[in-house]
Length: 493
Image (cartoon, rainbow, N blue to C red):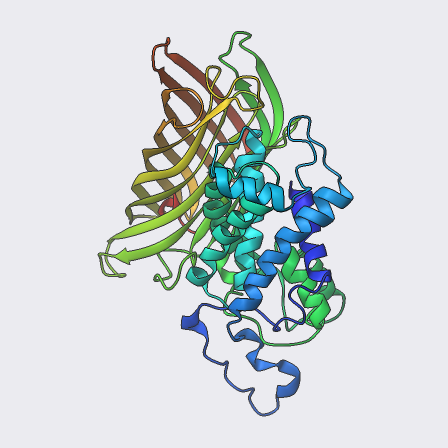
């Protein structure tokens, strides 16, 4: 799915759907003031800087055409002509026409039976491309949101011969907002419009997987090499990265009680610091977590959460500081033992205070509303299909606290509880808990060692059937390296 998404982006742009786009990056409307003129003696002439490149005019029609072009080329150039998909159940689903469009419009929405990784990972990725069609054409965050749902609706009704899927609409729309804005901001950090030579080339190339459409548009418009002003989103001081690598022991509570030891790499990316940066616009603070595991399914976990709104109740100079925050989150956990995912909004409090001698504490408490969750269970899903999981809305809460020494997490605890009410699949309520404890010992300024103990606990209450209980212990030891002192992550759980 990710490969198909990248290819479709390249083909979309080369087809000229968004021919000759505006140069530079989009900003939120609050940041659209032109940058100051260069001082006397500057080495770059104003005509070479293209100073307005960092604040392009809004082009909503071009954004819609670009989003439409993505769908057209997914359907015809990729699914039909290149891959020539012929599904055992759905046949050549990309060969659409008036007959399939009429049937889809008449019969309406259904819940599909696609595999978990397609629905919960692949569709949000595509939604991110729709979202960035708006951002790259001068639209701000909120103005780009409708494009994810518009692109999803177009695809569901007109991009496949299968009936429109309600779960795809939710996952593509809500998940695309989160992944789209995150990768948009990261691409701006990777690129440097003032750089030259080989360094500039490799920066542009490195941004390709984050923003494939934008990268090719920049190549065609000449921005791949043109020296210009950087957008406001490019703030390298906002970025922090922590890597944790080591062995992982996982025990499956299923009938075989399987034990597996494998190498694991955890990457935790932080953008912005809520305790240092007052709220200005959506996703000016976010965190992303990716867990890679050796084996058949390398991506075992992906979590991204960014703040949509924040307000501090205390004075920034107070000994104890407290915030109210609203965040949007996408969650994907997929490994051989269990699967869990969803799109959600959280609202709650974040607090922090200093203990002295380099120690501080961060704490959080959030309520969660799940627009659409997915829980894998032996008794769930749709029989005789690839779907072994249920869909439904839900509620939950997130609580956590961390003791840190000079921003290095020394001791942290976290508890995530959710209830998903199935509306597609088995008649059940699924209660899922993810408690964890983690310890760390700093060895040098950027290096340390640590250990993690977590548990996946699922209790499924079926209507007219015996309840199911599943437990999955997860133990890790690791070496850790961080690029700089990490901002607190509590505000984006």
